[in-house]
Length: 233
Picture 1 (tube, one colour):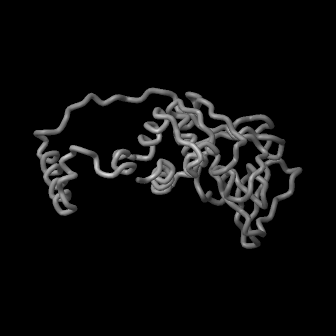
Picture 2: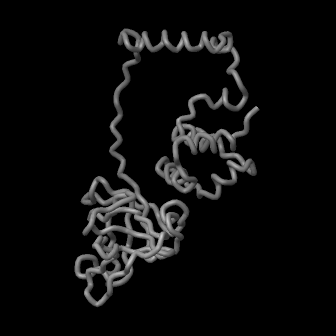
Picture 3: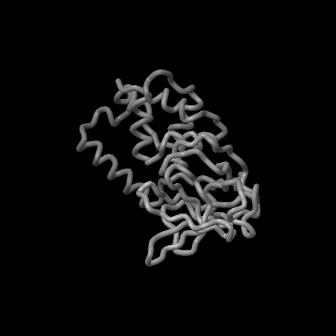
């Protein structure tokens, strides 16, 4: 018999989700759990409630939780078949679906619920590459109606280095991505610090540029550099 923790960990890794990202997906379904709770489940130190387990199964695409936990489902016709027989049964099901004669007709439900994203605070204490994966320095907020649809997270700016375009205390919208083009404004991690800057690539090297002229360019002369996203509004 498998364990719930092993089942969740295996499915999460197949989905390429970190534990904090899985916690965010649970939040979208109205279940507030920290990534520490998920770690506890995966280590087998505790188990999620029935409602939470169902939500996790939905997020992680676990459609055979009984089989994974106990083995074959009792009284299911598949238990009488070997692997070749199961494959032929699956082929026949595909033919039935493809024919269009035997598929269920269900009404499509359009989700009009407001999108929720993470709101981070600047500056954020995080190591390179860990800002989005392991930082707890955020809250979940509803994305404003006038925000860009591509917004993956938001950041509240601290400081005047990007004035006059971005003011101290202002919130910016960010599309999560690993690269930005020359001249684009992004959110970056450099030597354990996070910045909102313009990226500038020159023959002499790469720099993080402030829009406020009283701040000097920051040279990127280390491997501890990461792009967290592009500022889109």
